[in-house]
Image 1 (cartoon, one colour):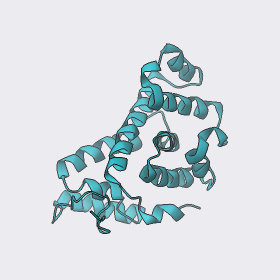
Image 2 (cartoon, rainbow, N blue to C red):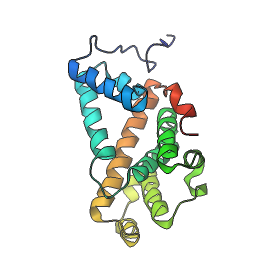
Image 3 (spheres, rainbow, N blue to C red):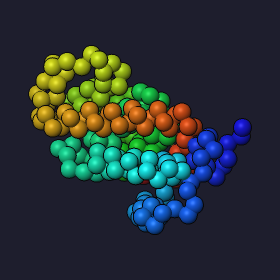
Length: 191
């Protein structure tokens, strides 16, 4: 089957039409604030309950109250997505890192190898934890958590690091399995 260029994934799952009023309002806000409706949202629009669950979790983790900055949460998204080689999330969240940091090179360095990026010890510890959680979650032990505490992270922050990493491990797999394409606008954004 050839991919339908109007669909954000390789799966034949067209969006509900018409979109419910609340969903359309949400998409309109995205278009206004971001200049686009992220393809991940368009991909989930075939099932509004799944879309609502996804956006509620994403908005809570990435935009809600946390001791982690928005940039730190986006850094975790990029590192997890890089390890998982998720094309969609590397592109989309690499653009967010560029935007939030004001550094057009930082998103690229983090996609390629976060260890080559100009990070402070706190950020490196956070990303080392996210990497280990992604590759070997069963090997996380108290010294791993203590390393984060030693860098000034609270136990709530450690929870948030794990929650963001866990969320992107899940969403990376869905994006890869469905052949989700990043929005074209992400490629040139914030350079």
